Amino acid sequence: MNGACAVYEFQPGLILGFHGCDREVGLAVLNGREQHLKPSEKAFDWLGSGVYF
View 1 (cartoon, rainbow, N blue to C red):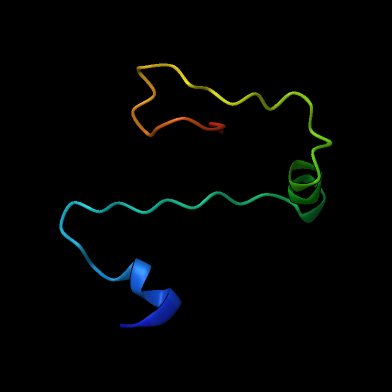
View 2 (spheres, rainbow, N blue to C red):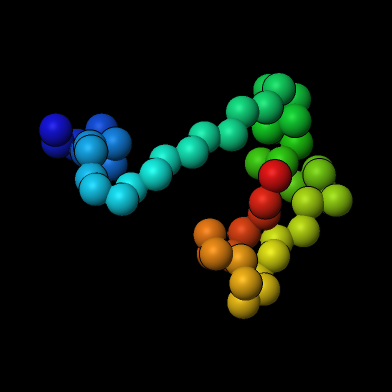
């Protein structure tokens, strides 16, 4: 594979997960209108810093 799809190429130990939501919710998140979503930056966040669903 090459290009943008290469990120989905099989790699040992790689686990991909996707989150889906309604269009309105996604747009609200992207536009900063969802005030209750707070990024986490705790040391025990094994997936790294970010917003967990």
